[in-house]
Image (cartoon, rainbow, N blue to C red; front, side):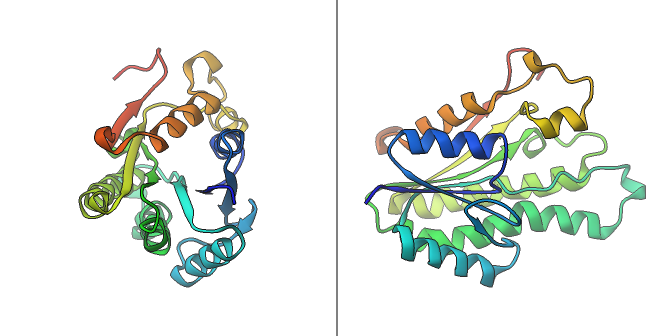
Length: 219
């Protein structure tokens, strides 16, 4: 049986690129999203999350790599935002990560080594004007990743928190930012190659966090 890679927040762009990269590398790759992907589930719901993971494992075996990309970009002027905006951002970035981690880690520990990647963003380390819901959620995700790394890396589960510092070139990003130029963006295929490398590091030299940005990005 091929090793299994699970990708959450699956969709066009990075999700598809990761799917292709791991399939090329000999994996069975499975995408999960709320309304698309190979399996559908609302990962803010713990019961749904465990149900879909158990069904995937029943069909394809225990995951060797899990990549969590689920998030929702919520932004706006702070005094015009409501508490629900912050709760939605947290639920989609952090609660989903909690649910998926609790569902997969017990099975991932059964491998000699495995990798869980929780995708971060610029907002994980720097709160910008108008990004208070998204940034507060991404800061929380970063803290979760650090705690999981300290608890589970000694048990063989490599926890990685890549900080994606820039905009990924996609149809959605072009719609959201009409003046966006491709040369100033991250390419999904390039990111997928980095994720592949992270998932195949030897235990003597594991990366927990790294920042990734296009050459033109200021920081």
